[in-house]
Image 1 (cartoon, rainbow, N blue to C red):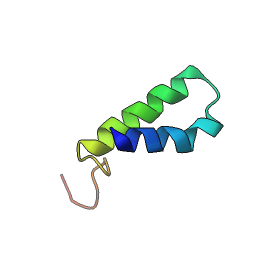
Image 2 (cartoon, one colour; image 1 turned 90 degrees about the vertical axis):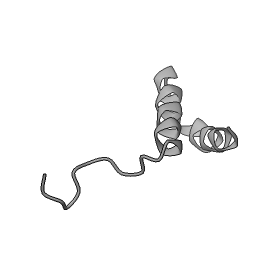
Image 3 (cartoon, rainbow, N blue to C red; image 1 turned 45 degrees about the vertical axis):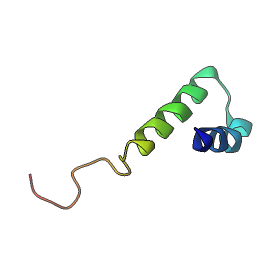
Image 4 (cartoon, rainbow, N blue to C red; image 1 turned 135 degrees about the vertical axis):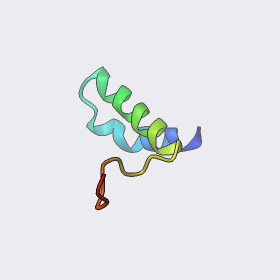
Length: 45
């Protein structure tokens, strides 16, 4: 969880509401689970 502390420390000065901390945590969870870019990309479906 060391990455979460670094992310939170860098984002903390600009946080203005409690939901900002939740978004920070969710971002960290998504990235640590391997989702770096979500979308359809250049491939046809």
